[in-house]
Amino acid sequence: MEHEVDYDKIATKAIIFTLLSERKIGPKLLGIFAEYRLEEYIQGDGLTYEELSNPNTSIAVAKHLAKLHSLQLPIEKRITIFKETKRYLSEKSQEESSKISELISSFNLMDELEWLTNKLESMKLSVVFSHNNLNASNIRIENNNKFCMEDRIVFLGFSRCSYNYRAYDIAEYFFQWCIDCPKNPFHVEINYKRYPNLEQQLLFIRTYLTWSCWPINERNNPSNMEDHLLNELKVLRLASHLISISRTEDYSKKYFNYLDFIKARIERYFYEKKKFLQE
Image 1 (cartoon, rainbow, N blue to C red):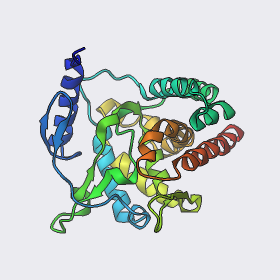
Image 2 (image 1 turned 180 degrees about the vertical axis):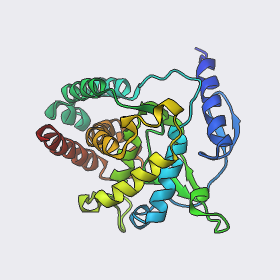
Image 3 (image 1 turned 90 degrees about the horizontal axis):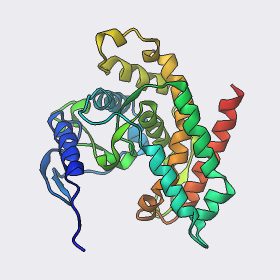
Image 4 (image 1 turned 45 degrees about the horizontal axis):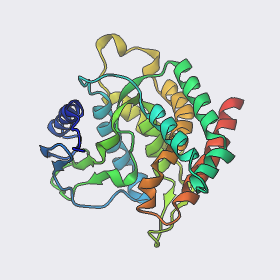
């Protein structure tokens, strides 16, 4: 049977990646085809903990993320990442003798996703165009010292981009500070002592809010104040951890201990959920 081409999906991707390229938020777009796209090659590795925690880098990433989140794209502004995760959990839970299905069952993740989805919808949080996969490997610093740090930052890996709650990307970015892979690329550990402290969070958030572009009638909205965004982060950290299980295939290509990594994030989800409910 001949493969059916989804031309609407191709057109949507063409619009998104063209705008990202024109605004220098993502790599230069060289071409889009039915099954793939051709992008500029960005030399370099993903950011290390030392680079992530550098104030200049944090400021540059905040400005770059503010530009991304300020985009108004001609696509439907609906959040799909939670439905996609629910579909993933449902499919994986049906697998027999699967370690992923065991995790889903033992932690009642379908129920947790339902609770979290309802909680987020009840809070009426700000929704923006989001990256949705802002891990350290998708943030690059171009090797060109002629430009300032802000102009050298490039985001990669936009295949999951869509509209989402604005604090989701920030929560995932802050979590990246905790990932530790010292010498063995097949073993990753999570060190929560590295999570940005309040001062580091505020440096990022204040920069982000300063560089965000809103309609005039939204600029004095209480939701665009730093305290409000800090509160958004508390619940979106839960989403960042819970959604991570649907990324297991991504991690399995890179890390030997990806199941341990996912389990650690789920356990952290429950730890932070308990704190969130006590506040």
